[in-house]
Figure 1: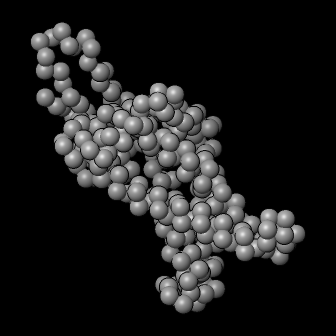
Figure 2: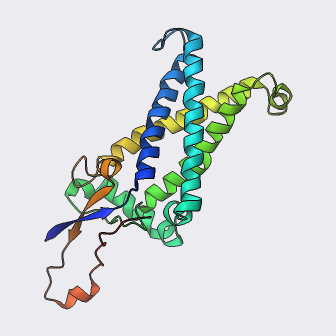
Figure 3: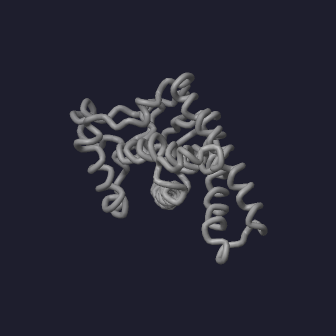
Length: 233
């Protein structure tokens, strides 16, 4: 038997950052396509207009990212806990979650991970976000900032292999990030309803489906603890 519980997993500052970042990244993707393939993509008119908008969106995303990492490091103090996989996650958690995503979800089985304020990401999400948020996105930001200041950093570009090397690296990093976005959106639909994982990004609350123990009572002592309805700092 199942019942639903509401868990507050996404504070307001994180929700604001998420949508600001999402809008900025979509803008970067579209303008980046026009800059890279001006003969085939023309969404914003003039080529220089696309460059200006791309640089503006990049600046917004860079500031947004700085605020995000500052929030989790200084205010919430939960960056490591939320985004770095534990040894148990690496040994069994990732494989258990992958098994759910690729098989048992389609058989109607419950998600093995239940979100709580202290553990809102499953092991696969932790591993993915660790790479995306702490490695890939910073590289995209740094390479983008360098490309905004070509003239004064000309000597540095030569040390890095020339401007073509930097442009190519920035584009490939952006392609990886764009590919992740499509996977991210698809996996977000794999809740107990297609919109279950989207709602917390609007109101902060996630509805968790909890499996009740239907045994003779002996199994109650071994049942998983239910997540409490509490706010996350």
